[in-house]
Structures are given as C-alpha cells and as structure tokens.
Image 1 (cartoon, rainbow, N blue to C red):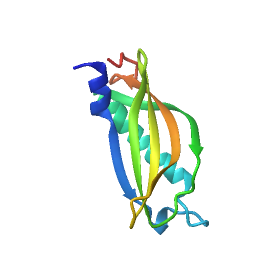
Image 2: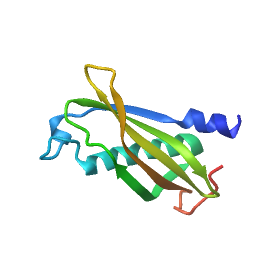
Image 3: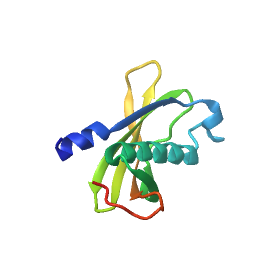
Length: 127
C-alpha cells in the first residue's frame, strides 16, 4: 500500500448534532467542547494510520473562524498532514451544516501532534 493510500484510508469523519448542552451563553458550540472533539478525531486518525499506541503531545494553532450555532450538524474531518520518525501531525477541520438546507461552511481548523509509544511509554517509529 502506498503512503498516499494509507493517508487516505486513515482519514476520519465524525458527525455530531450541536445540542444546547454543548453550547455557551451565546448559544454557540463551546470552544473547549470543539477542541475536545478535534483531539478525539485526531487521535482516531493517528491511530488508524500508525496502528500503534498514540498520545497527543501538542496542538498547534486552532482557528475559530465562524461560530457554530446550536441546532446545526457538524462534521469533523481528520487527515494525516505530516509524518516524522516517531511523530505525526493530524489536521482537523470542523464544518457546519444547516439541518434543513445544503449550506455547509468551514468553521474551525487546527493541527495536533502525536507520538507513537511502546508499552513502556517510550517513543517508537511511526511507520
């Protein structure tokens, strides 16, 4: 399997409905909840790519370009963006979809770095 095929096969997509219990006082998705969901999708993507124990070591800049209102559907898309020796970077985008129309727009994007570890929590090669 080529590296490009492996990257494509590890792409992860998760859909969620934005309910009031995940929103802030502005009736938009709480930023901490968005970051939690992004890290989860990034972790799944990294694990599907490497098929090893993966741990988050950092999150790079996360851009909140549009508020995500309650009553919408969000899609989180994780994709491997860079592969190092023992680490890899996963980019995650969150898209807003209106429930009753085909309108869709990117709202948040960020990058997460993971390290592959062994059972003793020591770094190992990703590939």
